[in-house]
Length: 352
Image 1 (cartoon, rainbow, N blue to C red):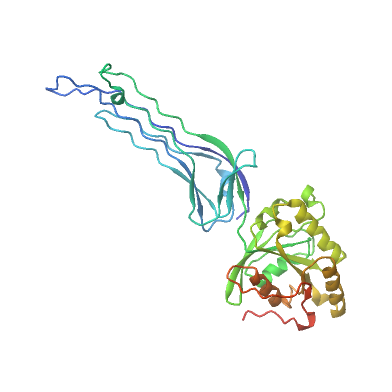
Image 2 (cartoon, rainbow, N blue to C red):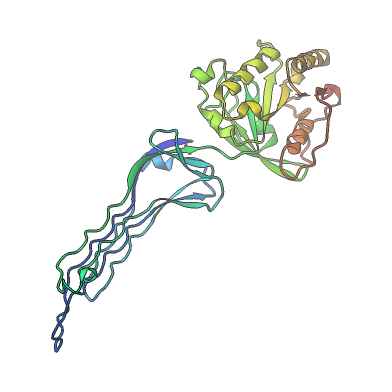
């Protein structure tokens, strides 16, 4: 299934049904009088967040949504039936924005949440409602009120507890494959990840959702590389895991600075989120170099550094323990700022 996180659609609520012009014509009834009923109300446009969806791909093929209009009134004071509401089902985490793509109209963050965005028009009045002492046989009726219509943008922001960020080839796909059942693409070239990935991590008898987004490069906020369009998927995360490659040609401190700068440039509170720095690929270098780089990262502003190997699983348990500390109902253990996990004491990952 293709991943699509933005879509533009047209929506229109149903118009109200017209009122009826009718008169009583019954045997032995000397004065019949008007008895035309009013029209029915038009259908509403309703958005509903449902489980089991994680893409907006359906809206690539269907962009126009129109609710049913109300039925017309009838004689003997019968009101027309109301039009059926049109329920548009979207993934949890979907925002509905105005056509300007800035004004947020709806933000659906819970399964089963239903919100009426456009209300259907009221039905027109039948001629029976126009009867008065001076107008005993009115022949007028209302046509029904029109529905509302507008273009809106749908923007999906995945709901995850933790987000994974870093430069291209930092090992993010290998990391998420190691700790979840995700089958993310892994390759020895930049931008193997072209769309966000979600995985469920099970650790210490608890579960949390981890989101992996494509790698950031310097200038991503200005559109370089894939740009920063996917950063919206980690806006709701409670903690970010920043993977730094110790074995690349880029200095780890410079790598951390680039990604931190792009998070700050993007805004939306990403620069203020709790971050855990993971020094990845320690299986390819000696322990002395790991400790030296970890010390440099601390001096550059990192609060905690976790030497890990996403390929072998070494050191990952300590990192996941720290992630649990930032999740609801977790017991947060106070640790001194600037603590470095000992690479020599890091144990291989185990599912138990």
